[in-house]
Length: 318
Image 1 (cartoon, rainbow, N blue to C red):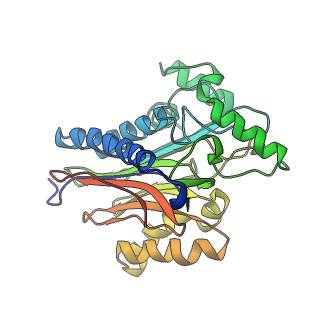
Image 2 (image 1 turned 30 degrees about the vertical axis):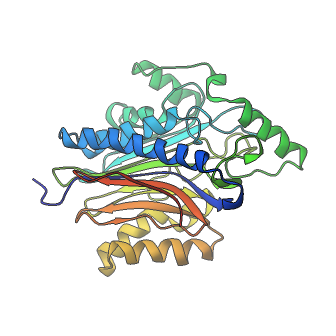
């Protein structure tokens, strides 16, 4: 049995603060959503659930909340479609599963878990991944289930302004505490369970107006998601930079090979290695010792954490 308290952290994106246009009501709605998800995860931890089950459950709840860019409320591609990515990894076994380019599976993180457990592979993509998820009994939805009027309006605005892909959503039609034009909307969770085991999960709708077929860091193990017996990490930010930096694995490597603390490793990756390749965003991490770190190099990040038996905490601003 683990001597450290079981714990959980979640994130829902990072980006630029619009403090001057943020209403207290809007801010509190985001914070309440994070706290509600944390409390649901805490209940599972208290019941003895595995870290793997806890991170999957929390990411499912984030996918169901259209405030975040994963599952319901996912952003649109340049072709006005949705392509969803996710991954999940168990630390002590290194078992992992990932999916990319899903269009009909309601909860991509569940599909990633199914790939891990039942496919004999680590990653499946596109229509074949949706077909596999359906064969495993996972709920399928019409592709337009993921969309919202705000997300479609965002796509049209971006295309009308020249067509450059943007990371997550423009806030003009959906006011939020972060400048949605500069918000990286991946969601994720990391957990340490009562047995001292770690797990991580990450899910995203990608980039508004992205080229169909584009895949970011979220389903790439070691880039946007990673867990071993030392640390569990989930990232959010400019996916290409996180892939080039192998950001999530770099945290673990620095801890294992250089003997760095969790905080030192995370701060090096987020503060030095990512900016060196133009990377913006942040990550959440929990170590096997029960340490927690949630750094970001943007002005804010939707984030929250809870230790078993303590009050859940949620933050947006620095």
